[in-house]
Amino acid sequence: MPARILVVDDDQHLEQLLQQLSQNILAEEELIFVNDSKEAIEKIKLNNYDMVITNIKPFLDESWLEIKEINRKIQIIAVLESGDTVNIRKAMNQGAFDFLTKPIDKEELEKVIKNSIEAGKKRKEILKKTEPIIAKTIQDEKMDSIAQVAAGVAHEINNPVGCIGGNINHVEGYIKDILEHLELYQEKFPEPGDEIEEHAEEIDLEYLKEDLEKIIGSIKAATERINQISNQLRIFARSSDNTKKGTVNLNECLDSTLLILKQRLKGKHGCPPIQIIKEYGKVPDVECYAGEMNQVFINIITNAIEALETVTWNREVEKGAAKPPSPTIWIRSEVSKDETEIVIRIKDNGPGMTDEVKERAFEPLFTTKSFGKAAGLGLSMSKQIVEEKHGGKLTCVSEPGEGAEFAIAIPIVSN
Image (tube, rainbow, N blue to C red):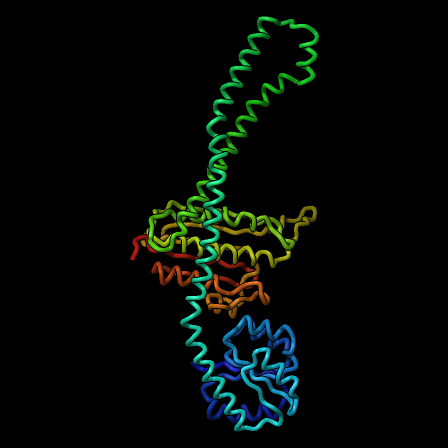
């Protein structure tokens, strides 16, 4: 595969030398020339370059460090003025592979480029072997921590909720008996006296009798909801064992994942609360590594949430105008037409992706976020889990301004 080389320098002599080398040692490599450092930074963020040859000055700031973090495979060759030892030292300290001094010697240029290409190939081979291991270790530790928290919370709320659920029916019966007894008093003593009548009016006795029934109903409904949450947490914790396959329902896995991410759905950074629209079909249980499928769902839904948070949502509606769209994630499950796969579709109405970003979306360590915000491992790890561990398929459809849809296809019969 040819190396992609980005040249960021307005030195005509350097360009001429590179054009000459493109006739021999660089004949199979791709050369791209730009003069503007901002344009170069955007290109490096969105494209998979192997080498950057540049005048050091535009990159002596946080942007260079950010680029190195976004694309760790890149080899930077700094072009400096002769005798500029301060910037030579600074360039090498900030991760430059090598440097050239002006006036540039053709043989020296050829030698540095050859060394860089060779080192880049070796680096790619090493990263190809180590990146999946690093990604899996990070994801496993993250999921194990979440599962432990989920199991702990489920355990802690189980006892008090069990106490409430076990006693609420008795309380309901006792209150019913007391109210019936009170009604008997009212029947037998229709004129209990001014003091009792005044107190009944003061506490609004008739309202209390009506509202007590509603309160008991609300407590029972809330207890049932807490039980459901506890069950979902236990499902998530149990399914996080990645050592063996188990039979699970992917709709339940999706629900337990949404529970874990519920706080993230409340909206932040100016983003209003995110609406979840569930369109679950009737799908059979499948044999899979449930914990790893939970990882996939968390990664993709989190990706959608973060994409929605980058959009400026207009919440003001002019009179007579149509209601503006709100941040939404659609989750749909269905059996494929040939009945061999379960397909989970996770779609958002965020900003979407350019073709360049979409092409690299599943590449390990690739991220469009700023330095330190993300490791760029989620989607690449998800693809590995779906396709290599489960024999399925993970695909993405997206256009700028049209949101993104990820489709996860898992075989119904395990390979």
